[in-house]
Length: 263
Image (cartoon, rainbow, N blue to C red; front, side, top):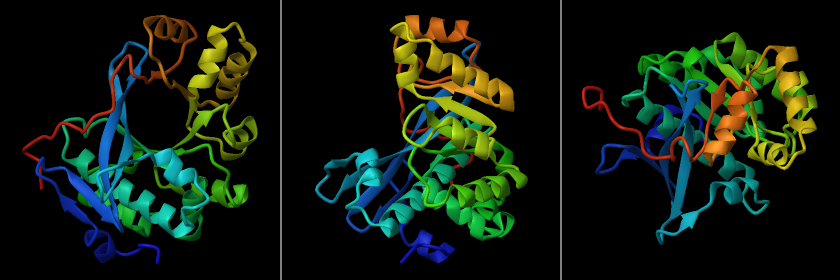
């Protein structure tokens, strides 16, 4: 059963001893961490929410393996993604960075579901309103996996954008995050994968040049992911990226809470 109404979500969500929202699904526990995103002057402009998954034995379950595995059912992928998004938003809403942008990963096959409903009447939009957050703060990152229907994914992205959400194509340069998807979806933001940066470091400049030209052609902002050294940061700043993300700048961690806002 795919979780769809508020009571079903509420039954899975609780608060831990650190006053952070967490979720339980089957034998899994879901927690939020956030990696800061910075502009060209290294001023923080947003955070990307990332889920940390563990099983009943306390063992870490890698999110990429969970979501990419053919052994994980479609229903489980949808439910874990939706629950992750729910706790990410709740924790962000009671944080000291709630005035910034929140980047949320969206599986394309889950994102397609936004094409089948009125976004403004959905649980996501209603919850944002209740938490005094705006849709304009939320960046829906379409990850690099294949969609069942690119046409339905485009319809979903268009519907989200019409309701004020920002759209990003994540990990550009890998798997399904291609020029075709970018031109078809027409996102506000292109997040360029670390592998493209590493190729640039090794003297292979064409892929990076094409990615930046593509962003310029459609009027999209750019984020470079995976910066781990000062040399990489300097090289990417010289290329004029809009935003920067990586372990050199900040590690993912639980968000700091504004105790005036803790529910």
